[in-house]
Amino acid sequence: MGRYTDGKTVRLLVETLKRGQTRQVACRTAGIHDSTFNAWMRDAKNKPEFSEKILAAEAVSEEALVEIIQEHAKSDWRSAKWLLARRFLHWREQAYT
Image (cartoon, rainbow, N blue to C red; front, side):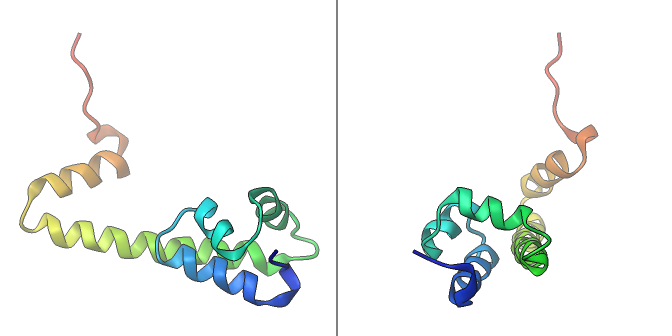
């Protein structure tokens, strides 16, 4: 079972999240339960850098994935439309009644 103090657990979480995996998958990879992860995220007093590392790792992943979509949008307009609809609410399609 992963422990916060061993350093390896946090590194595995961060690296797994950077690759685009979900928090749930990152927890399984690092050998911790989701509830442990959530407790660490809330424990700003004893683990102030943990949530910063996690959020930064997720931002790296998001940036890389958006870059892929933007690159693909150059040859397929649907990628751009898909991203617009998720990024800007006013671009979402609405059913006509």
